Image (cartoon, rainbow, N blue to C red; front, side, top):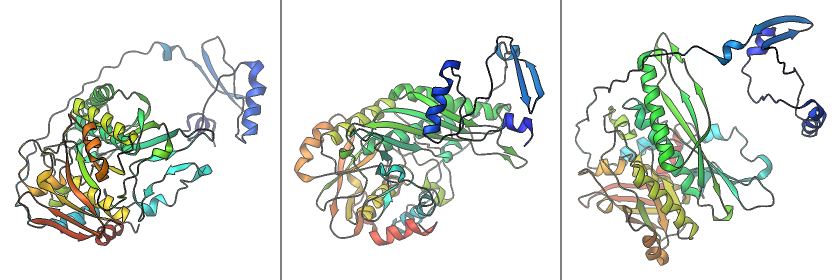
Length: 441
């Protein structure tokens, strides 16, 4: 390849090191032992110039003073709230069909056919894998055991929902942070740090920059609110074509620690007779949800993050896991309570009976479908044995939580609506088949 291509290539998995000359051989020996290619390519100079040579020829000679005193760049940022409204449509009497369709939607459906093409067993240190339970349901996070002489583990999780950004990129960013943190928390993670990955359009255009700035403001506020610093990140900007910009997207990755991997909690149901708790309040927040998408709408009631409530919920769930009261835990995200309950059931091969009238709600939720498919943040479904329910409820004191159902031996999901009528009645086999149908999982 040409010299200029070598110099500006963005090939991955590379690093530049500066090393004292008398330490060079020691450093190279470390790389040789690990069979990693390392090559001395230059020296630091005091003349303030960048000189590049290729096969004996000088191919660049540049004064780099401009790098240290660049002129300030001023740009205009503008974000205008889109003119959206909440949809109006009749409430279905039966929600079984809608639940199955959401489980099969591309954003929710199993990605097993893709995941299995990658090695997630490197060194045999994977404690919690991408799929868990008797029937391979979706794990909330990955747990690794990086140190041979320690039970301490590393927890890695993600959060992302670009559809929220179509309503407000601020709450898209806040929701992605909340989701990544609660996924980490659900398996036992704490001491969490964050990484961001922005995929955006041309920031030189005021509306693109305005939405980017709004997302960044949320990152600042909620990272501080949760006490979870950003330690790294990556951006991919200028993603435009004649058709327009990409949908503004923010992926948040959370990295946490679990003190003892033997206390890792997975999301699959474990024992018939256990109580199912919903921790966290449910609001009429379906803007950008899978349910509205299914009905052909986007809405405007994008899920919010109430930082004090969210942080307190995370701390309480970690305490419950550490106390040994939690048999299974799953966060609620795309598809809300309906999808989370279905995934827990078919993963563990056990049934559930749920009563929506027992769900802690706010904001005047009066429809069973909205309670079932709301995507409010900061919520967890938790399986708790009957014998420790009192102790669990003491830990949850001060939070919005309620026992909403029980685990059943029969492989069936039965959900009763706000008026007591049965709104979902389906086998866990049908749930799992729907979830696996889209991508051949």
